[in-house]
Image (cartoon, rainbow, N blue to C red; front, side, top):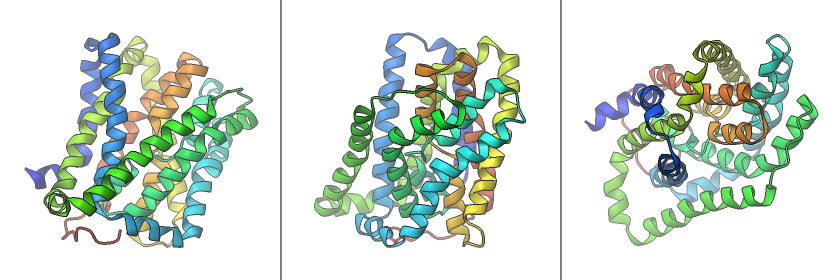
Length: 314
């Protein structure tokens, strides 16, 4: 079962999102909304914790010696990608422009290290860039949206920064104490982390899509049209990821691809819901499907079967 889960995590992830599309309309109301909300928050902490146990804190800190790579990936994600997408957006219907730039300006997913652990990427680099871009995003997203599409978004920057900092700090603290005081438990967990992350991503994607399934079914024809443009958008993000990691080793290439194309869509949905029109909300929700489906070919290309050395620097 463990090998089955690890070898098919891309498909399992996609199934979670597709099931949510059909079951989500029946799971509405304040109770379900609260369940999904808290599961996503717990999920972010859990994914980071599992990723930390897959590697070790010293390896993560050592990654800061590669400041050039960290800087390049962070700038590419938060600045270059939105500018590239802005240029592309002039070739598509204007009502999609805000959503495209918003998605492009969204930071790397908190799930990045977990995905990279399954795709044989650089877990430490992914974790560092994910943390940095998420902590910077409350400051950069309003600026990007204002200077590209003229949208005036006023975040409660300090509250969002504090929340994201807490989400990041908790798994680091728990991971440190587990490695220091319960090393035998960590040793037992490590060989199963890939399967644990796979199951968790299934439920995580379900919880991300289910609350918004009604938005998709409300105008399914429009949703299909939006899906077409989000697929193109995802392809562009992958191209940017390839250009950023040009001539790099496969480990770094897949790291760049995940950072650029598999970002924090949950944050984009929250911002769209609070500040923008239904079409923008729909596009941020529908991007969940290229997000999950894209993991299938990535797994086929990068996650080839080979022995994994647990606790090795990633």
